[in-house]
Length: 140
Image: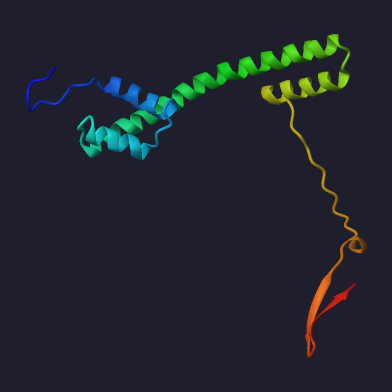
């Protein structure tokens, strides 16, 4: 317990870890975390901002590391699905699984071909003109 009139002392890394925990596990916003640091931990606003920025960069670094691991797991899952599809002789499902594996590895891009030709006959145009009886539809 701290002496009367003294603040609780936390290590900077401990506060950063708790900020990351609040963001990930509790889903708190930066504003809520800032208010928590100011009111509960009794930190000054500039120092609280500094810690939130440090936690943000640490969070980004951890996310990058976790992304690689998550990607490997996803690829392994699709490989197991591909293997099951091949054993069941389901070639359509096997092809789709290979496509997903290729997407995750960055080897596959979906291409959409757009034709420049357009048939005006298929488009119905409604033109409303104002006459003395009100609006009138004219269809081409």
